[in-house]
Image 1 (tube, rainbow, N blue to C red):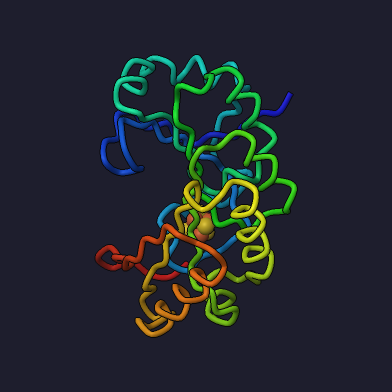
Image 2 (cartoon, rainbow, N blue to C red):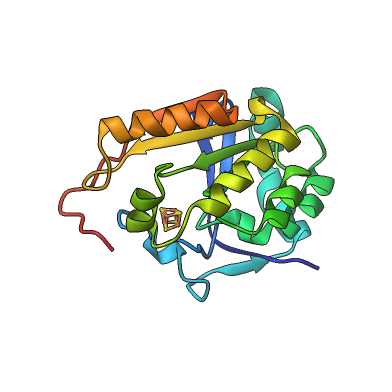
Length: 209
Ligand code: SF4
């Protein structure tokens, strides 16, 4: 039975992860090494976490069932990279039914089969695309983005554009507004309809990892 490595569960989030009251489930482990990562402790698969079966996680979050149902909210899987554990998600969906909205914050830099598995369970994918330029992406994350772009096209075809929100950041020291515009144009040509363009805000004294 798949288990999910969870480093934190945060309840009663309002207006942060889309409509409704949400509970954020932070998933341990990430294949990227973003220089301005806000959760560096979440990157190491061996970092501090607790393993949950789908039943155990359902028991931990269902206390907010009435809030989810009344506000159109639900559970957001973040991290780290929750799609590293995509095989966990259909079992969790089967337990919570269709009344809760399930979202995943993901880079999509995971094997294609993980994305297709998550597509069976997740209502909204919030994709952190970084930058569509492969050179900018590699400098910022340490990885190539070819898999990410292929997965995005695959996901759009599988679930349709309304279930995919792509976040396009301005990244201090790594891209410029003109790069972000180029990313947005490339995303639109792929069929992305929902785009959130924003800027990373660094904390005082934050240094790259
Ligand atoms: S994808 Fe997210 S968790 Fe992973 S390294 Fe980048 S910012 Fe950190």
